[in-house]
Length: 288
Image (tube, one colour):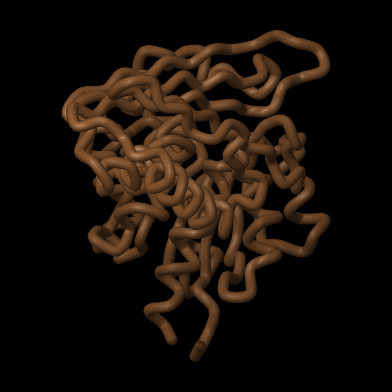
């Protein structure tokens, strides 16, 4: 590479701070700075302690302070993202949206990033990131008339944003299962589990094909799809191999977080930050 891709992080909460750790570990990304609005946030303090440029005066201030930003991760809120997107677009800075704003096209790195070359992309939901790669792979094997996913996460890893947007989560995930995954129809469910100790994210996937499934071929494409996701989410794994009953197949995937800043059980959050960094690293290849 001629140089590293310079990235900014907007938002100094749990997601933004976890992104910081993942960017630091990347061989092709360089953190240009972080922007928040809470001067007392742990993320802002941690960024400064680790030697990064950080401001509590928001994105506008960071854009004045940091030079040469190529891409920005927005880990704030849907309401704030619209203003951020306009500022970034005006400066020709690509953005990866981790909020529910959905202003740009939806991307799942293991499936459709190569087909999307836009100023801004959206990462949908953790349920979408965890299940669409499997659905898309099976749909390429045999067309799916229906897909249903049940994502179960620890209630401790569901913040106010998740809790306030349950309907939006299910609608966005289901839409991704059809538009990116390829199923004719889909349904998505999320369950917040209060178990102690906290459980790791689990996703049960139900698939229906009018032509049925050949068990060995099904297992092969599921294994291959899981391996592609595990390249950037090491804690992603199939925990129950596909079982076939007539024209319905069922399997379960688990997502354990890397425990960079977030706890290991928060795989639902880790898969989002991991997907965001994967997008940036693939864009960094354009600088080679």
